[in-house]
Length: 290
Ligand SMILES: Nc1nc2c(ncn2[C@@H]2O[C@H](COP(=O)(O)OP(=O)(O)OP(=O)(O)O)[C@@H](O)[C@H]2O)c(=O)[nH]1
Ligand SMILES: [Zn+2]
Image 1 (cartoon, rainbow, N blue to C red):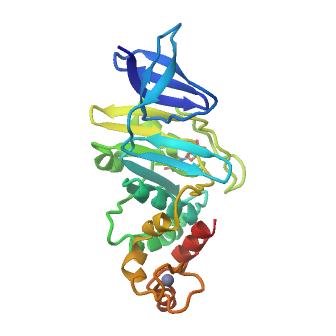
Image 2 (cartoon, rainbow, N blue to C red):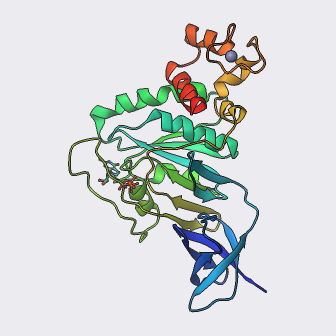
Image 3 (cartoon, rainbow, N blue to C red):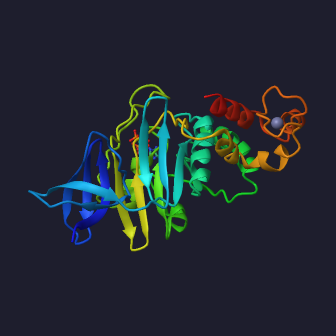
């Protein structure tokens, strides 16, 4: 009988595997690739000095990854939701939010937005305004937005984490590690002070790690990301991540309308009337234009 366990940390081509019996070992993939992610259930070959080859992974409920022309980067396997962390400061990219939504909806994951650092009161209105288009766009989809001051209290997040395997995703400096440390005493995730000017965060979390919150809930902290390439998704899959377009596209003159320069495009008409938010439309062009 081969050993089985779950990937609890991913460091490039090395994986920390927590075996079903509780032992923690090193897993090394066969070949040159890094085809596993935190959250994967894996089976291992024979153990030598706490190290074993990873033979295979079990079928995944979901796989969150990003890609560009050159490579794919796995973020998490089997997660049921993304907790997208943004903050009042440093500024965040709303295009990254649109991208994370496309990836999440493609994998049938829920998205919860955590707006952190609400204590920085003079920045709060601006951050809320930046999120407003998403609230409108996702009116037909469940989209919780949880405001947080992670330094003092993360309990507002708890009801959203119950029963889920959540993956924290966000740009560097938004407070993912602070949230993880508060939720998992002793996690020891590195946090750092932003010492220099605003908006100049450099990332510190270098690898993804999975933490158990209770018997039914887990949390994966992932390195801060500045880009979320979606080169692996088709036009239709990207369009699916824009739920506010769904009811409209049937009204476009062309069945294969790309909502760019085509005549009688219902999406562009909705843009002109303000029914579709210009930021969301810009994100759609950026993501489908690649
Ligand atoms: N004012 C304020 N600062 C916070 C809050 N939460 C986190 N911070 C600070 O924000 C900075 C970034 O927090 P981290 O938790 O390291 O951010 P991160 O998202 O994990 O960043 P990476 O590890 O680079 O991905 C640190 O200086 C934190 O102390 C908050 O609620 N309010
Ligand atoms: Zn169209």
